[in-house]
Length: 83
Image 1: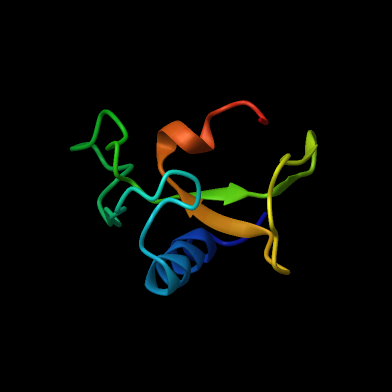
Image 2: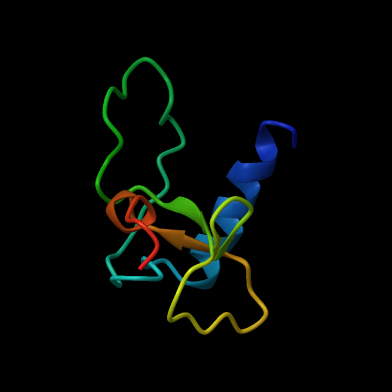
């Protein structure tokens, strides 16, 4: 398992490259305090890391990967079933 800062740094790099959901285009934000006691519900505009190729479910359908396996996505799009 990667160290705790790995995903934070990855998310920061991805949002610098393109600060919108890969799927719906919604503007996303980083919430450095997310996961602490003050946040009880994930914000709708939280930048989550989405794997275009799932280890368990295989690749998502209808994607143009462009040599990329990780993108940022809003929580709603990231939690959708493979479409």
